[in-house]
Length: 249
Ligand code: 4AZ
Image (cartoon, rainbow, N blue to C red; front, side, top):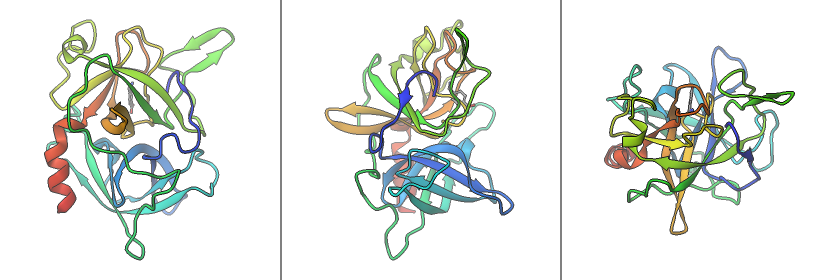
C-alpha cells in the first residue's frame, strides 16, 4: 500500500494473508485475500500457483510474529475462474475453500469476521478501503519515490481510494483499452495513494449503508501510485453468479 496508514487490530477483520510453502521452507506471504464465509475466501487468480501448499492467516497484523488473535487455516482447494487469462488478467478471481477442523474453519472473533458480497453497484467517486502487506513507497531525504524502489512492510496497511468511472479509466492517457467489464479502477488520477505488489488478491472494501462489502480484489496496475495510473481491481459484483455456483460445488 502506497500512502495510507498502518492498520489497527480488528479494523479489517476479513483481510487475510495467503501464504505458500514451496519445497518445505517456511510459509511466506504472497498475496492478500478476503474472508467471505467461515470456510470461503476470495483472492486473485494470479495468486494461485499449482502444486503449492497454501495456508491463510487471519486476524494477524504483522507478518513476522505470531499474534494471539491469529488463525492459521489450510487451504483445502483453490478454484480458479476458468476464464482467467494471465496476459490480460481478465477474470482474475479465485475462491479458496478452507479446511475445517472439527467442523469449523474460521472462527468469528473481534479480529476475524467475514465481509459481505456486494449486491448493488456503488457510485463512482465513492471512497473505499484497500489493505494489505504489499509494497510501500520509500522516502529518501525529502524525495518520495513512487512505483520503485519500494519496501515491504511487516505491519498491514490500509488506504482510502475512490472508485473511478471505467470511461475515465479507459482514456488513452490513463489505462487505454486494457479494461473489461470484470475490472474496476480505484485510486486517484493525481497519484500518491494506491495498492501495489503483494497487495494482490486483497480486499477493496466499501461501506454500503453500514455493511462492509468486498467490492474489489487487488488485481493489477501500471506501477504503483503514479499519476494517471490508478489501480485495477477485479469487479466482484460481475462475478456473483460464479461465486455462488462455485461455493456450493
Ligand atoms: C502487482 O504487481 C500489482 N497499483 C498490484 C496492484 C497494483 C500494481 C501492481 C496496483 O501485483
